[in-house]
Image (cartoon, rainbow, N blue to C red; front, side, top):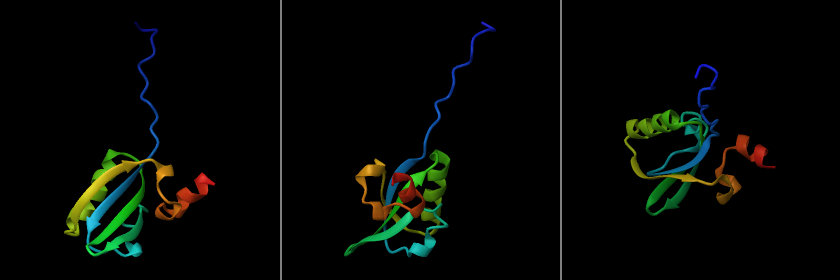
Length: 99
């Protein structure tokens, strides 16, 4: 068996997530949340969505910990297809890739 190649790990691409929290986050927080686009989705009730690519599960966990540290109530975490979101919800660096 010394001539066999070990099974290779699939190369994974960042997955796009939409994370919704109760409350308001200003777009200036984007850098702290690994460049996710931040927009207020609803005023009543006040809901903010963070949307964009997340490189791996460790990064996703880091983002969720930051939400926890800010004492924001988590509403949902969803993996979404990049094409299913309006382009205004994706960070600028990803808009350029889709063109």
